[in-house]
Image (cartoon, rainbow, N blue to C red; front, side, top):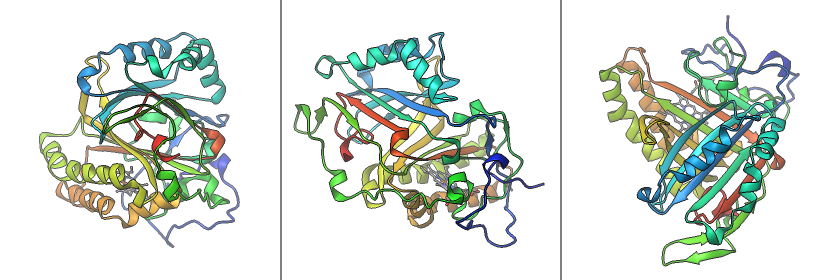
Length: 362
Ligand code: HEM
């Protein structure tokens, strides 16, 4: 029996119609995470360090953050590490950590000593940059989609269960239909304007290419849309792995490069195409990646997916891929999308370059 991506306790009478075509039958199964009914929100934090080059990363930042993350009081329910070299050549390594509530995150930040340490960071004394991006979505502002029920990713590590196969996927506009808040709210954002994409105001050092800014907090934006879209080809057969690496990975990289370098053309503030890092070796896995992107409006994200040649190539490539494998796909894909009120976002940067995250666009 088909399920709705919106759990029963968050369903209400729609004042905004769903986009589902009449008599729509999803062409393949996909699933959404089910959280305990009592959960009213969750927290996702991206906490990281930024180095001029990968060889400058000596592991000290990871050790410092790990000590906080494994503190006994209210540690995250789940965390992992990921890295990316950005378009200025800087190497960024960050944790992605999840808590089941804002209260749990606050208790951790306070009692692990993280908050005191973070507030005491002096940009002038930092050998490298630090960044803190935290999202506090209420459950009505979060949706997830997985092509498998078995392997959790991201916030699914806090799941109570996975849904049965859901109705709202496989057509454009289904992401919006999976968001409980969209039943009654257009979730319109504040469109990014040219001024948003100007450089920062306070500089710490400035070389010919890089402007390193001091300590900057960026206010949240109305209905900012955040997507983490992951790919895991760890368990693929040699044949599927080859096909993924030769046909899907290159188009995905192209799409992520476009959002990173030309995101302002489509309302994307920031895009990082990250490799999940093996906790034992501190090296990138190279078989698990995700795109982490921030858009000014859910509609901008929808438009990029539906109209831009880069996601159309990813999307079209995936269907050819599935056909070649006679639908025997072992590649795991998932995404989590949040549409956030300003008060549900926190952005702070210390001694980072001016193109980092939301920094360049304030
Ligand atoms: C939707 C493929 C990467 C953003 C979809 C769908 C497919 C797909 C098949 C339709 C899903 C459904 O409703 O059943 C892929 C593949 C990817 C990939 C194979 C990588 C290998 C990404 C990335 C992003 C992204 C990196 C953004 C950072 C989206 C969004 C939707 C979507 C927002 C929902 C569109 C809507 O319902 O209006 N993608 N995608 N995708 N994709 Fe991708």
